[in-house]
Image (tube, rainbow, N blue to C red; front, side):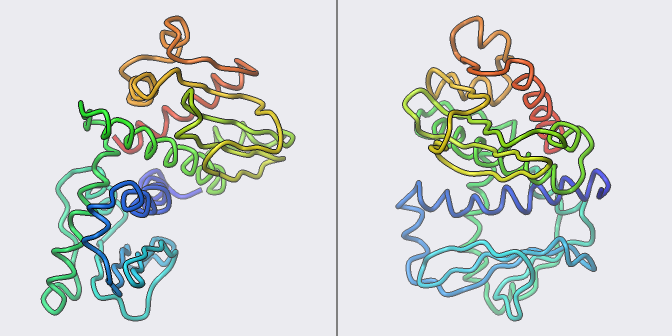
Length: 257
């Protein structure tokens, strides 16, 4: 298993950065800023090929790609995993930015999209309903992907949780079904997905009564036991397994705080 800092970097690079695509899907005004873009923005940790990815704009459509690009327009190069974690966690970190002078317009144009990702930070508690709804969606997508990544990279608590588990679905959703995300576990393997898993009944379904309820629970302003008592959250299925996976979710929150 990677050390704690590298593992956190993997979560932020593979589960948080892809959410730039969600930001554009949810904000047409922001998406219009990138109309017609054919550019590549790369992130990499120096001398660590496992920590490299790029965001590729093709006619304004954004795709997240694991690995290095041969000729990115902008290339954020970090000395180590800790510097990347610091930047993504809202702390001071200054990477080397290759291509900044030649493609300054690309750099300046990309920054609003990166700033949008700060909504994931635990310190960001928006009051506006639309921003709360967006934060809930981002968190559900991030958490389910991060749980799967923890398993793939040998995180002990997650590996123990999944090792002998038969094919089961852990579902998270808000009362009206949107947003929603799930994690499929089968004999030590995991796969994250978005929306409601339709092929079988979830083994555990964490159902929030509203966006505001989900917001309060997912930002740890209300703990799960209190949320269940007050009707903000219903855990349908195995309460023991629901508690176990919620504990691992807390580990993720602590890692990126």
